[in-house]
Image (cartoon, rainbow, N blue to C red; front, side):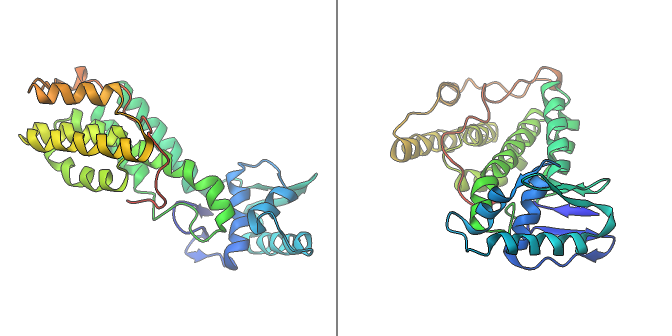
Length: 272
């Protein structure tokens, strides 16, 4: 079986889509998948499903959701009672979130090793698994607890893929995508620095400098802070016209010393 969390929560076996009834059952299913085979207590599941004011029948309703899941998922997985809650053993089944993390980690390792073509391919494969905002179709309680870290992982993978592309000299083709990402995530200094670098290498120095100023204003207005030292240093290099061209791939370093510095919480939605 294959389970999807990076977009609409779903389960498939072969060509058949497993029926999941509404956002509450999807929430129970997704919470169990995210626990990686560990027990999720009744209390935690109930809070994910109903929040802090559950109905008196919540324990019985939870049992019903679990029983239906057990029947619909079939023999390929084990959904069993474990002490104060439930655990899901998926056996040989796959989860797109776990596959994404494996590919993203491997791509990051290739990037650190200076193998930029391999890094870009691996990270692109990881990002291709996303079909929309993570955990679509679950309750706001579960989405609020889990989706932000998943979105952060996606954005980090986006930055790493772009870093590899810039190291390979593909600055021209990164500008459009980076422009969209910076508009969606104006407080991410890593992405802004990457777009500044790409614009400068395309001969668009004035636009790169203006982009820095726009970011400086956004950080001041939203968070009351100045850009970090890496972004300021990049600005000074561009201002002097001293930003080096991409070196030979084996000697390329990160565009920013800290390319994934997060200046604030990401907006909702995947923004792919």
